[in-house]
Length: 469
Image (cartoon, rainbow, N blue to C red; front, side, top):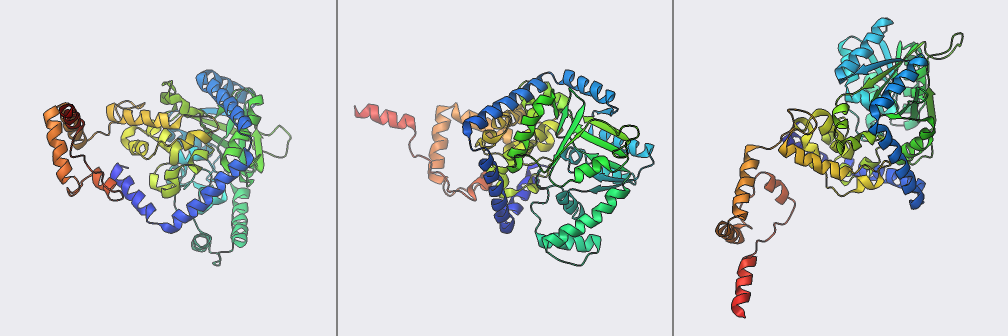
């Protein structure tokens, strides 16, 4: 998507007053929830520094930690797969399904599967993926992408949910949340029971023990990981901690920053398939480790800080831009400050460079980030990369147009020539308030009062002062 498309999306979102009001209410609840949990600022900062150090240490020696994770997982009976691209990861999932003659699949909420468009890939190969997180289930019925990484159906009203259920499930229309929840539970329970494969994401993979950790509030991830005969966990290579002792603090900061809870309702740890003779659990457990551009990010000492991200969504909840335009305006898997930082690096600035401009650089995101990522600094770096070169993706990224180059070349000549600068200033002093704006200037002046140009420059004032002495 280009900048023009993004601008159109923003205008559409800003004109939706109902959505803006709803966003203001929900974002406020998220912010108050976090604030009510982290009341001791000194203790909070100490925890942030500790988990930052944990993630920095892991990211700094990521290849070694991943090798240990693979070794321990394999020893536990987990089959580990490496995927360089999203398509390769999807193909691995399909191959596993075909190996067990599987066609139906139940999924818990997983942003990395959204990143690789797993559902679309499987549907093209005659498989039936079913989202089981209630929010994901709703947007799957509505054929929409997630609106928020924590609350994917945040933008959908209960009336719209009722319409989606009636249209897709054949239920009698109602907007009663309790009835809608009961209908979803009834529908999904049968899918859990008959699914060939279950897919989950991974919040943290513990290298020391080869353990997969998944947090949730609905219990659907536990069902996906335990009821089908095959469990496939998919994760980016950065979602790893080195030691089990690191996990409690990581979970505390993840859950608290995301929802303001001390701990999620469900906390799952998977260390392998069921033991011989044990009646419960999957017969096979697979772990798919996805690169998809992360190794390129890791090469840059500054940009690799992005890989510390826990995907808690706190930065989104405190972002003044997201609060006004919502998630769909970005047209990206990861919206808000996370997406502004991650998407141009994963997919190239030529494709998502517009997101680097969708930031006020106010710093609210970095102030609440549990791992203290300097998001504004990284976004500023990406803006520079977008003009000068390709960032972390070779051969991609420049967003400089001919008009932009010409405008800045003219500006440089004006500012380095005394006579030309004086003439230009005087011209704008007389015509600047009535001269029609165009391009980016028009978008800026549509909602702002134009600044007045001074009739006299600093040199003129200094000369007058000297003459008056």
